[in-house]
Amino acid sequence: MYLSWEMVIVNRRSILVRIAILLVVAALLSVLLIQGTKGELLVFANGEMDVVLDETFDLSGIEDVALDILWLDVSVVASDAPEARVVLESNLPPQSRAQIAVERQGNTFRVEQMPATWRLTFGARERLTLHLPAAYAQAFSARLRSGNLHMTDAWKLSTLSLWLTSGNMTAGDVTCNTYTVQCTSGNVTLGNVAGNGSLNMTSGNLRILSLSGDKHTLHASSGAMRIGALQGTVEQTMSSGTVEVGGLDGQGSFHSSSGTMRVAVTRMTGNLSLHCTSGTIRATMPQDAAFYFEGHTTSGGVKTDFAAQKDGRRTTAAVGNAPTYTLRCETTSGSIKVQYP
Image (cartoon, rainbow, N blue to C red; front, side, top):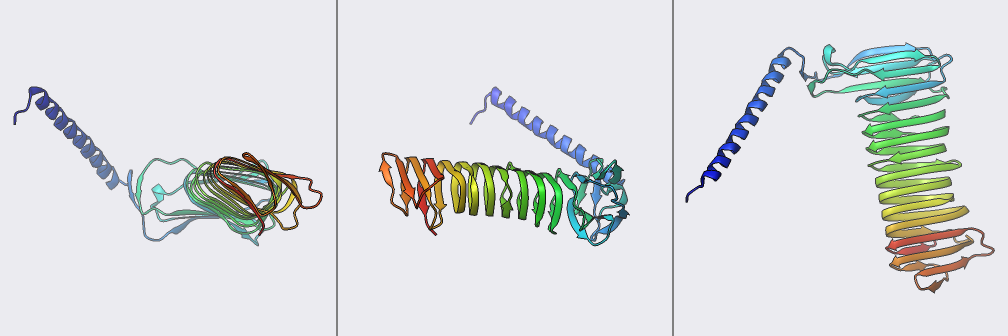
């Protein structure tokens, strides 16, 4: 078998490229090892975490508590003490630990993680715990670029604002005037939330035990949205995923581009629209409910537990005595089923 000069040249170039890559990698490893022996770039963590910061702060006159964190795991804990307490635990050596700045800016109490020099760490564990007085009832906000946020105690706040770029968010029961929750990548689990506001998820799963108030705007790009009890006027959109509501006492619209939608209605306080571009819709209505029904599917079937009239792809019905509000179900590709429990 003979090789042409062109093939020989290509093979030589490929070998030279591989050698160059190996030399670059070797140089980088050498730098890491040399700097690592000086404790500058390569950091090995200790086994156990030590308390490296533990301070208390007076919250008199404070109307807003704000966290701005880069990568730490954060816990917010209710305390019987009248002061706030900030605790940082770390298993890294002193020069590599997270640096925390705590300051009062007017009526705002701010806890901020400062930017640090990049280091390659092994076995790093760091945790920030904010102890807030259980009686604190003003505004609270937390912004995490990476990490997990836990605030599982019950809270009564004026406003709740949570932003998470990457990680998981867990909160317990929260009563507030307004809420804003935004998660770019991760999972959000909430307890009983009372208030008006918006929740936006780019990628991940949302689970809420109950959500009550006058108005809620809920959006998710992909994943699953599961809400146990939902009360109020709702505007919900889902790009791709599953939508499940265990008990809706309210009105509004639910829209999913692709996926399955299951909504159980306990009471209608206005018109309700369920729309799925590609997927199935399952609506459960109370036995004694009175409502108008309109169903439409381009490709699929419509089934109801009550008598309905079909006119081509459109299905209509007047259910119960003196109906006032309308339940609209529409899917482009998929099936619709409206049933009793």
